[in-house]
Image (cartoon, rainbow, N blue to C red; front, top):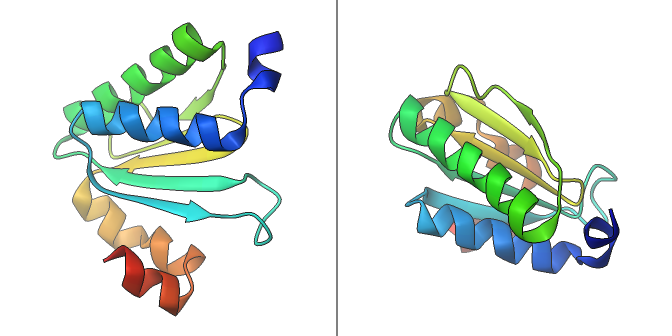
Length: 120
């Protein structure tokens, strides 16, 4: 997959954020993981209002990345629709129902206190 290697993590992040915005994701937070973790360069956390919206947003994101950028993603949790994890390689995307997101509080785990105050 030539296209998969050509895309920078920043371009991939931008495509992901646009897809989530187009699908009316709520409370979208991006976290720069460079220097904090080897798992990815960025993490994106977003909410959908219902299990149906969470599943639909996740599915559209994966489809767009495949069709437009040749990027194949690993997806976990789509069938339940409470929390979908999309691993694009350079960017990890979490799409939650609000109650599930509140319970896990991933932002608190990955953001420093100063970053957390900027996001809110």
